[in-house]
Length: 186
Image 1 (tube, rainbow, N blue to C red):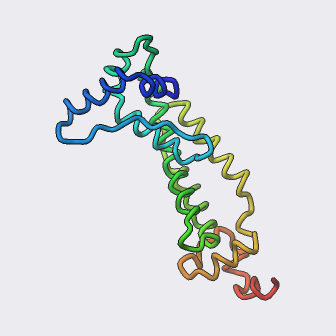
Image 2: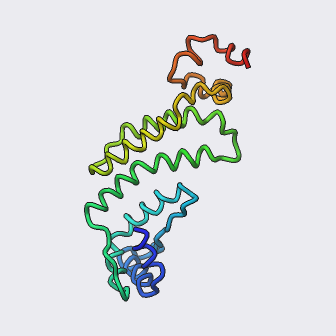
Image 3: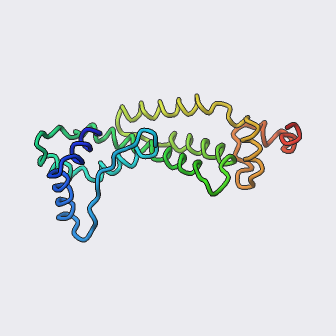
């Protein structure tokens, strides 16, 4: 996908063909450009995939204008990209929400990670590779955030925020244990 996007973006005839095809199909709407993800900004991957899939029917036309065209994604690869988009969009939204600068974020971590895990669990990818990707993502979440609810700073921040008082999965931190003892033993 990177090669296709780079090829179209670096070729003036291909870029013009992409723009022209969009204007013919959607008169009155501003033409969209392909987005290339940035490796250090993980949240750009879903944007790149979504834009590619949105413009996919125009990409064939644009690629035909290149001097040395390369193969575009086939149907199976598009299906896999749709599954990757399905799974990465909730992760990108969670990252953006946790990365806020205008509100405290420490108390958000436990509810966001729990919600993210549950959200990904109910997703149903349609390809075998999409199912494997979903399993790998869930394994990674479980590995990276194992027992994070027992982190005293996160637990206290979440407990003190009234919106998230009963968000804990485990009974020890908030339900059966005296809730104020978490604060007392700090």
